[in-house]
Structure formats: structure tokens, C-alpha cells
Image (cartoon, rainbow, N blue to C red):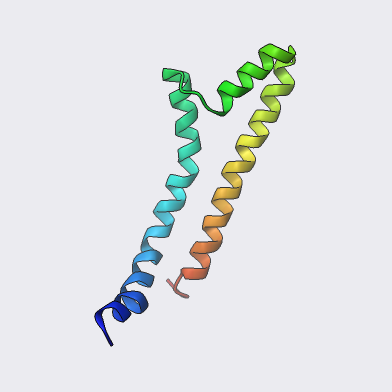
Length: 94
């Protein structure tokens, strides 16, 4: 077996099995960190756009509820996709 083939068939699958749980945690926390940075430093992102829309339409409750739903759906979607990947690459019994 060549070096590239051994990396592709042995090393890479083992590495991915160990890395995917950490990636899923980071992927779930990333949107939460951006919200925190928005509130601390005013970085333009989802809630900034919600604030702009709320000021233009004068429907702040509706705007923020919809924004929160989008936020939760995004985080749930990312988490579920990474759970599926983790299950597919997992070793049975470990």
C-alpha cells in the first residue's frame, strides 16, 4: 500500500472519527459567539439586521421572534448534520 493510500484509507478515517465531535461543538457555538460579539462590540450580523428591520417596520417583537427562530433552526440544523456525520463515521461499540 502506498503512503497516500494508507493515509486515505487508515489515518484519515481514524482522525475524522476523533475530530468530528469537537467540530460539532464548535459549529454549534460559532453562531452563539457571533451574537455575543455583536452585543459586546457591535459587529454586524443577524441580530443587527433584525434591529434595523425592527426600527423600519415598528414591529420589534415579531422581528425578534422570527430572528430567534431562524437562529435556533440554524444551530439545530448544524448540530443534526454533524451528529449524522459522527454516527456514520463512528466505530460500532466505542
